[in-house]
Image 1 (cartoon, rainbow, N blue to C red):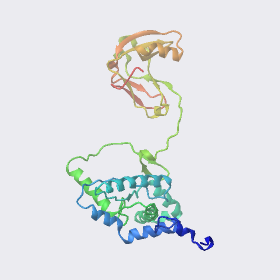
Image 2: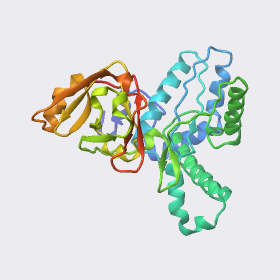
Image 3: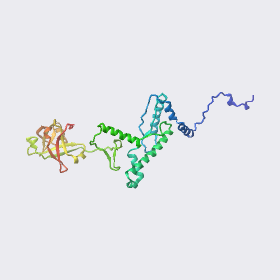
Image 4: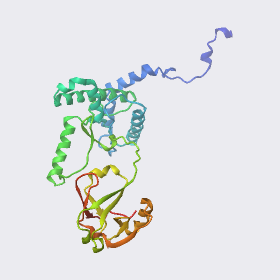
Length: 327
């Protein structure tokens, strides 16, 4: 036998396969995705799992204001694992993707794009531009998520800006209203001066700030003898300590605990109303070398007293409050 004429490959019993030895993923993946869409693979899976026990993954929607990044991919791929695993376990596990299409980030981007034109536009026109901007990124993100191989109801996702979604919210609100769950009250709302819109807690940027604590005295203008006869003809002050000095201009009252014992301590020519348990610490902090107690009385005796605001021509009322502490 002449070795030079033998096809050596035919002498080895190799397994045969139709799979290409080269992946060619940049070409093959788009082809596979296209075939899955043409064959309605997701629809076939739904039909095959019809009437089986449900397993539904409620997916928190991404925000429609930019291209996807690794965080988006990590989130979507992991959730797709779960949906597909449950499908293979025999569950009817649909996946309905969605997008959050409302909020300040979209509004800011559209403001930057419109520039001076915004001042000449109606509210409806500005909202239409915001909707157009959100839809642009819904389409881009949807395409990229499908390129990752995530199966779902991509042709009909839920969007927070869709008329159906908004009508359900409105209908639910009316249900709450009919059942008496809705009431009108007061609540502080974070407001952005620059963008002239309300802000969610998550949209607030905080910066650490150190402010000095301060002692402030308020001159008593009501009759001091009504607190205790020993205070007659004395110059009496209500004394407060605060770690929020910026609140002083808006001060309208001094709160006292009705059950705590307070004293009127004379330091020099002035008399200060101080909680008994804090008298020693207060004297040390304020540098009182000598002082004497003229009277002692419960906090409830201070209800209705009137003090003069130290900065503004306005009265601050003595009130009682259980929230007052000795700390």
